[in-house]
Image 1 (cartoon, rainbow, N blue to C red):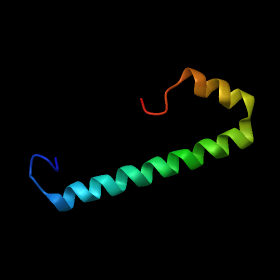
Image 2 (image 1 turned 180 degrees about the vertical axis):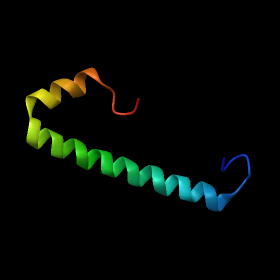
Image 3 (image 1 turned 60 degrees about the horizontal axis):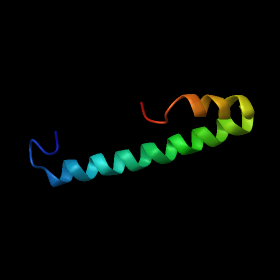
Image 4 (image 1 turned 120 degrees about the horizontal axis):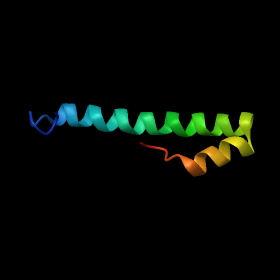
Length: 51
């Protein structure tokens, strides 16, 4: 949408959101690894991070 309306502000918001979401996902993965260990590591091997 940012490209369609040619809005730099909206494009910047999208970039900030994507970076924030990525860091949250990495934190959640660390938490899952600490709590579920090998079982979660096996799951990570079967499922991609971003579907």
